[in-house]
Image (tube, rainbow, N blue to C red; front, side, top):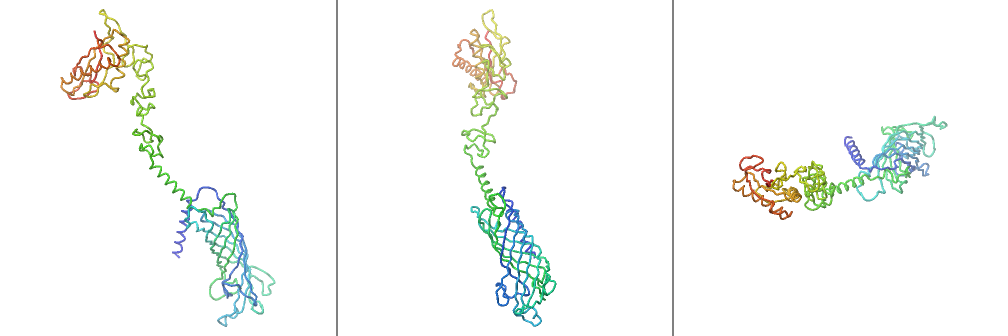
Length: 487
């Protein structure tokens, strides 16, 4: 008993797992079936089990006919309500004891009407593994409970003398009644799919009755009567869907899920542009080789100016600054100070401005030389450690401003003052500061065509550090070139 329960539990669990894989679309679930076939009785008045019985030397067969209405919950489990009418027959031609002589040389004839509710397990969907071809055959078990109403008469062979009845008032058979008993049907069947709406099938079953008087005989074995029913059936699937729930292959959906998973895995592994972000998540799938990207595969744009770093001439633009297609901050009044830093955004053309874009007033002295009010207001040029090389990082925008001031004021002369931090000896820093001043003069002369006579390069070494530091301590501000108006 425990083994049987365990097997049923395993089937139920497997069925539940299969159900979970059913594709989420509509299927026909309701059906009706008509069936008919032969019955076979197993009881006290029984001699020929597998062949029609004989009465007075003429062969007589027993039969049944009926139908059911079924509902398929899922590809594995269903339920039906079955109605069936049948005849039952049996013959006993001899016995083994004299005391059993009443049943010897006797036959019985019974009619039954059965109505049951049955659970159906379509176990084909638990073992079917072909995920590519549609199924045409299906195997199932059925088990249920209901009632059978019957009447039966037993007669003597040869004389047809009535020797026993059930469901009649008396032996004269003049008043028909019926006796009702509980019945437990258990069946195995095979179905073949003809079309999306029609199936045909064959089913064999055994009906266990809680009575020992179907054959109008009470035996002394203590075993209740039962009868078999083997039938052919025609089923019609009700509904407008393309297929029935009963014919769904749950492994087809599982296989599709596995294919989708494999496709996703392949997508995760594929990186067409080689930027380290899989194509499945890459929002910029055609990144140029070697370009740094963020987690979504987009080219990095550190200053968030809309120009990727690898195309940005100034990758550290001020936050919110407007830039051109090359990442350079816009300078609307062309005064050499970007709009984001310009406190006077409408400077007149050719005007001299300070590092904030504010106009610097110029005046003439008695010696006909030009000076800048307040002194050192032109932007400084900065250098890297131990370097006198002019590059974009340090100087181009500042030198452009100085060149514009010189061209707008032809009489203006400047002292170009080199400075250094304190990371070397005093003499070394003096020489390095001079090289920086010379480099600035050369850039203004060679690039902007400023007359060399208007520029004087001098060195102050580490003597005038803006930020006081200890020896051998670097400071970006102290590594610079300043401009002073020459007197």
